[in-house]
Amino acid sequence: YVCFDCFPSQWQDKIYVKYGRANVDPYQMMLGVNSSAIIMTTAGLVLNGDIPKIIEFFKVNPSVFQYNVITAITSASGQLFIYTTIKEFGPIVFTVIMTTRQMISICISSILFGHSMTWKAAVGATLVFGVLFYQIRKKYMASKRRTAQA
Image (cartoon, rainbow, N blue to C red; front, side):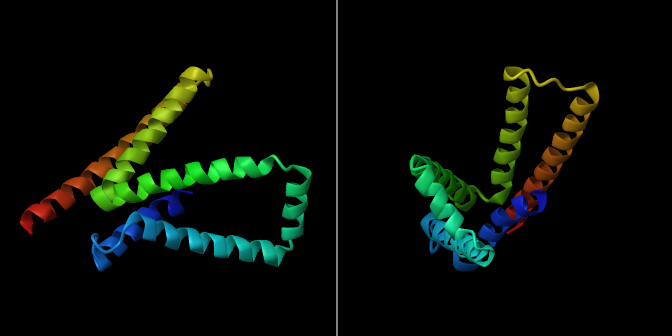
């Protein structure tokens, strides 16, 4: 998760830099990423012989289709926000947003669902998020200096 979570935003930023932000829009980025995902998923399903199982599952559970459509719509909406954020503000700002979201999600989950955190877990979470924010701030300041020098 950690390795693949940081890859897309950096890769997308490289595409925006290489081809120009004005020449690549979020819809093109979505088309490329989702087409690749569809090809890889379909290949995996075909190679494993799972397509008949999926068809059977949909026949037995017809209401699943509407949930798949809802998931696809919300996923596409989320992707648009992600790609637009990366295009307009860059991968560093996106990383800050996602790290903050994860931290808030952990806190809300602990409070709403009564998930207790031992003092060791709280110290660990503080250290992890502290290091992440430090690294993000360090990268942000470095990019700001590069922009100022250019």
